[in-house]
Length: 181
Image (cartoon, one colour):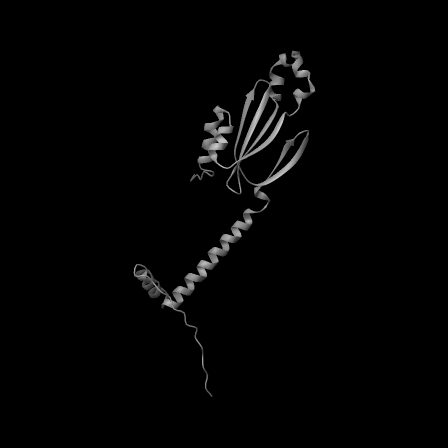
């Protein structure tokens, strides 16, 4: 009885500049075949882990939900991204909040909410004497808008001057600060 074993054969072409690393890997692994097989297993594992990371990013953790005004109606608006800055500014008796998001498609979304500055009501008793503050519209949110910009420059042009530097730092600065403490 005769037994034949078939061994698959693959030819790998190596450039002269890469030859030293192939030789070193072959010496460490006990041959070129085991070195290449181990490298390919590691490559496939890393690529699969990368895909798993991308799938994990598509969880509810990066889902943004905002109430946006469209005429008299409020529409619940969703998109994927991360908030990178929240800036507030007091203008008279109002507080304007600017929230800047980097979207999943690397654009910038600017959410603006204009509401009464309720903290001023308790600090300043003259508020109660001003008939303008008695109007029902004064106590309501005036604006809930969402604008999307393709570039950071377009976004910064839409912000009030004193908020541009803060937004620029939030966008260009580190999104995570790691402390070794």
